[in-house]
Length: 83
Length: 112
Image (cartoon, rainbow over all chains, first blue to last red; front, side, top):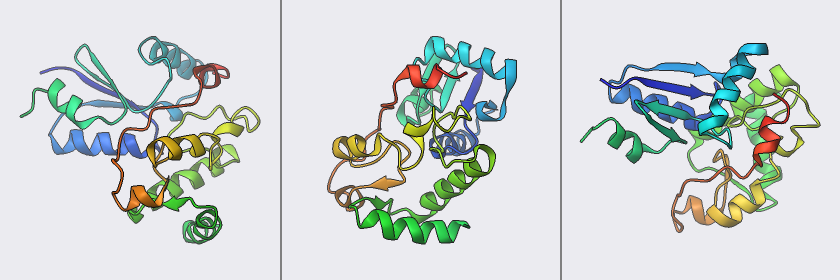
C-alpha cells in the first residue's frame, strides 16, 4: 500500500472534496492542516511544500512518490491504482 | 454577521455586479463559513482556499472577493474557490474546468 499524505487548509473546499474522495475510496491517509500550524513548524513545512508546489496551492496530496496539486479525481484514482 | 446574513448581503450586492453564487448552495455555505472562520482568526475575510499571512495589507489581494476573481471568471467562468461563478457556468453552458492559482508565488511565500 502506498503512503498517502495530504497537506490541506481547514477551510478549503477543494481540500474537503479530496478528503471525502479519499474516505469514499477507503484510503488511510495522514492529513496536516497547514493553516493550523504556526511558528517554526509552519515555516519549515512551507519551505518543504515549496519544493514540489511552487505556487503553494492546496490541497497537496502525496501518493507514494507522486504529488497531486488541487483536487484532481482522475489523477488520484490513477495514482491509487483504482479502477 | 452570521452566515445567513452574509449570504443575503453578498448575494444582493455581488449579483448586481454580475457575479453569481455557485448554484450548489451547500458549497456556498461551506465557503461562507470558511470566510467567517478567517474573519474570526485573522480579522479579515480572506479566501478560504488560500494560506493567509495574518497580515491584512499583505493579503489584500486575497480578501474576498479577491483580486483574481475577475480574470478567473473571464477565463474559467469560476473564481479559484468556486464561490462566485458566471451565469453560463451555473447553467453548465461552459465546461467546469480546474481553476489554476493566479496569485504570484512571491505573494504566498513573502510572509512565512
